[in-house]
Image (cartoon, rainbow, N blue to C red; front, side, top):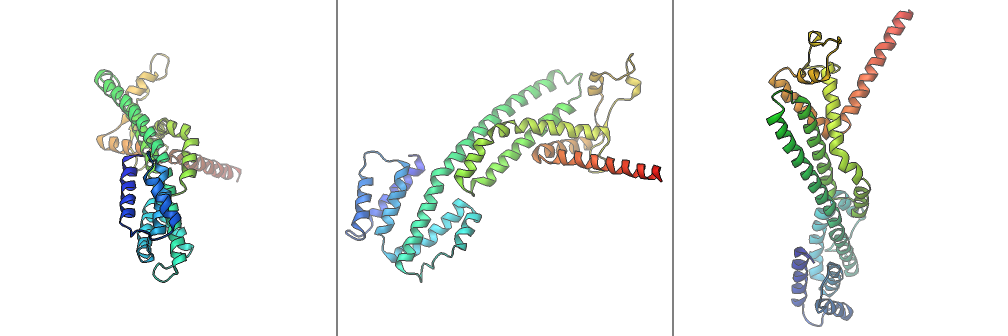
Length: 304
């Protein structure tokens, strides 16, 4: 048992001790006594314990407890699951018969313990991913600081900054998606989905860095222009070496944002390229589509 499980167990035990003696089903009371007097307690004991105690509660108390359990289901399972429960037309706790109220409450208790038992599986995977990402970001940040302190005297850091910002954006995207599914959906289905996709999830930060670098190339080539996009300047033909071409080290040193405002735009778009995984692929598709439409128009005009 974790600390929360122990507190919950003690609360249920106190609720049982506050019941009138010899009230309710004898079988339910026997189950409670066996669970309370076990030498060792486990998380799996919580569900049968609470279910048995509910069968010992008077109906007036259960009619009030239904509302509290419904609120807990909405908070734990999420609005989608709660709306599906409401769509099943649950009974009115104040007007329904005792059998209907008890059946509804037992269903709610089962749903709640279903989520209580399986959500930690998703949380353990999330914690494992956060530890991996934290280690990765710490190593890369240390390397980047070393780069700025030692190498930046001779090199332009724009490409390195773009890669690092795209990596951070992709990392935040994965964490955001994990937060979205924490409170809703089938815990088993989502846990299996995270486990099966863990390879791609652990590679997602590097994909974000690659997408940010590609977007940097698109800006530098002038394929996307406008006031919302950064202006990237690069070396001219006068810097070409003896071979008549610009060496790659000179290209890296002489390429970067034209102004401080362009630095802001570049870093924002680099983060967006990592965070929104479809941003760069969709941008490339639009660029290719425009070029094809332009080529088709030129061909039609030439044919005419």
